[in-house]
Length: 184
Image 1 (cartoon, rainbow, N blue to C red):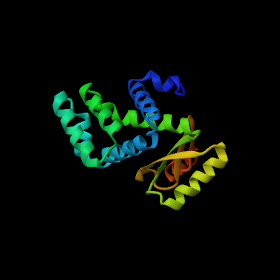
Image 2 (image 1 turned 60 degrees about the horizontal axis):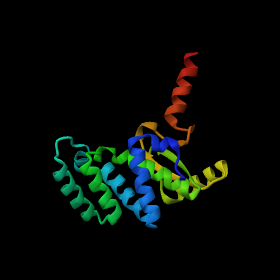
Image 3 (image 1 turned 30 degrees about the horizontal axis):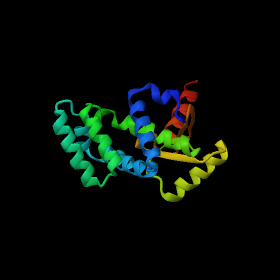
Image 4 (image 1 turned 90 degrees about the vertical axis):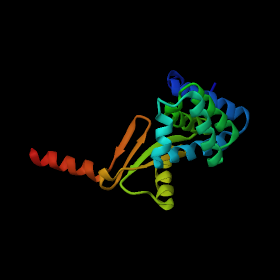
């Protein structure tokens, strides 16, 4: 099996491995990844959807019917739709964000890529993403898949995490370092 023990150790990791194995066997890895990306975006943008996923009071049937309706409205692939139904029946919808992250990691490993979490103060345009990917590819020697986040609190610059390595060129960190140096 191509998976890492670290991913399989967690509950969300076991679900992600199961989904990944089914998608690989069905030759729908990228289709499932696209559906999961849509779910990830919906979780970030919709308080209602996030509330549904995290609600402890919905019955299994209600959660299952609701998530099936959401999946249909979003046009998700059948495997992901069925998978969401399983999560609802097992009361594991709250694990969805962690499952998505684990699936992305499994897919990147399968493709020989490394994942990088990039935090910027403002959304990056396509040219900036491409330039960043090229720079990171030159640094790590492999293709790089980016998970971009926006955090205005960093003021400017970037914070890049690749595995256990972090490159912090944010203005907030530079200002904090300057303030610390001035205190002597």
